[in-house]
Structures are given as C-alpha cells and as structure tokens.
Length: 186
Image (spheres, rainbow, N blue to C red):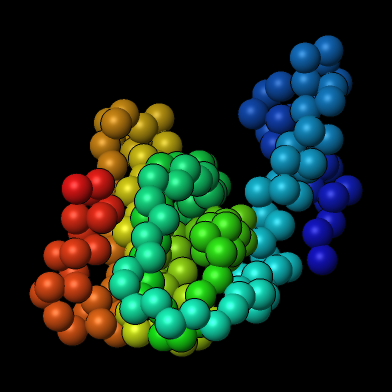
C-alpha cells in the first residue's frame, strides 16, 4: 500500500535535513511532486508481471521472436537513483505466442520496483518462462547507472550489460548465436 502522505512528509524532512527551506517558492511543491513521481516509479511493487502474459494465442511458430532496443528506466535499490538503457527480449514459442507489447509490459512492471539490474534481467526471464512455457528465453539489458555517473566513480556513459538465457538458448550455440545476431541487428 503506497503511503503518499508519508512520502511527501519524508521529502520535506530531507529538504530540511540538508539545510533547505521546504516552504521556499522553488521547493514548496517539491514534496508533493516527488511523492507523485514515486507512486509511478514504484507502481510495479503492487503488480504481478505474469498477469500481462495471459492474453495470447496458439500458433505453430518455432523461430525466435525478438523485441530489441526497448528503452527503459528503473531506480537502483542501493541509492534510489535511476538507471536506464535498452532491453532486448527474445523467446522461441512452444505453440503459444503473445503480442510483443506483452513482453515489454511484463518487463516494465519489473522496472517499476526498487531494482538491481542483475535481478531485473533474471526475473524477466523467469516470468517469461513461467508465463509462456517457451522452448527458450533470452534477456539482455544494457544500462547506464546514475550512481556511477553522478557519484562514486563519476564515469558518464559507462554501461552495465547483463544477460540471462533459458531453455534452447542455453543449450545450443547455434540458437544463442542466432539470438545475438538478431539483438545486434544483423
């Protein structure tokens, strides 16, 4: 249960704690705006990503289906700073397919939680395996983390790449190479 008023009050406290006046003109509405933003950014906590995979249909197609270069953002659970980038999702149907938007929507539900990129990659693959019962699943996530850009090592442009494969993609080099060629766009 999202507690909007508590978030708003906590942001006011943070502003005071850093020496700011939360009542000054530029900051007066900031606690409310941040609480509203957090409601959206963390809306996936209350959602089940597998719910969006229920609508599909039977189809005897056995080649890879890849949705690539899908932009996303999430908030790192270590610093509550954004990380953002692209996700590439592929699966090999096993007699059941869903619309490409369903793959993206399931992923998006997971991005709207305090998150780790490694967990996001693995959980996305697990949700697709459980929801689609495919012959294979692969998820590749490329992201820039603001905790590495604006603090810590301060290296803008550095990307973290994670991948998880299941089923056929995990068992044969040919399937994995075919997937990677599709992700790269060749």
